[in-house]
Length: 270
Image (tube, rainbow, N blue to C red; front, side):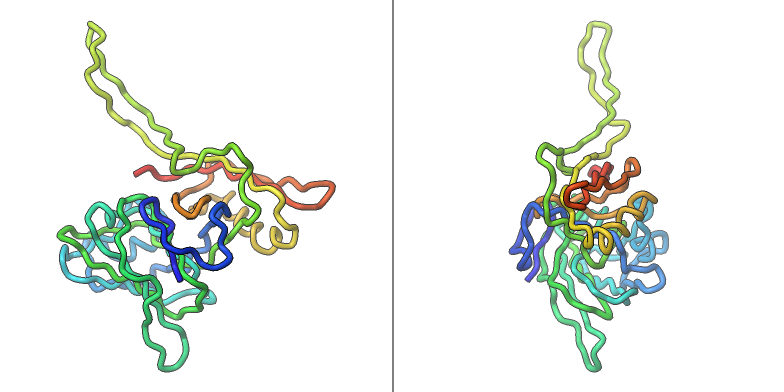
């Protein structure tokens, strides 16, 4: 059972997932040395997709033929989600499917997420059922335009199941846009130019169990404070590809020992 955490499409979530539990994918198991594609351009090879930056992308050398992106997985191979931070898959009508193969002798690739359309070019957070994989494949079918991808993640998710303090701005609605507006001498509007655009959010997650914080959340907070980018969703629909806009420190309740943490973040704006 799988669903897309993408703004245009939501399928049935895995058992145990609550729609307003923040979900984070940060410990990427995709490595440059272990990613290949059967189509790429000389200027934009597939290794670009394994880089967390989005200024360099992988671009296919075909606009019509099916494409397979293969990853031999690092770490323990536990995969719960795939993230695509920057892409043109939605606007070009390129279908996306996820296949995987376990490490068992004689194992073959099986479909984990059926071919679907993302609907737009927002960051995509594709959730799959828990599975330990030796290899992961992203299978694409272009629709007349060569697809590109920047910041391709796969790995285990971090779920913060106590939810977010009421009153936050979702990352998908947190547009921070710098405009240069033009006016004539007669105060007639001549148009606007966007000179910079990003998104931001500042959610606070409260009452995190101490054992869970120390085992699962603390490693993420340390990576967060060192600028490691991550995929983030708060509601099972909208997703962001984000990074810290400032460092953060947890606050511990004197009464219960539970942790509160605030995540000041910026994200890409498409």
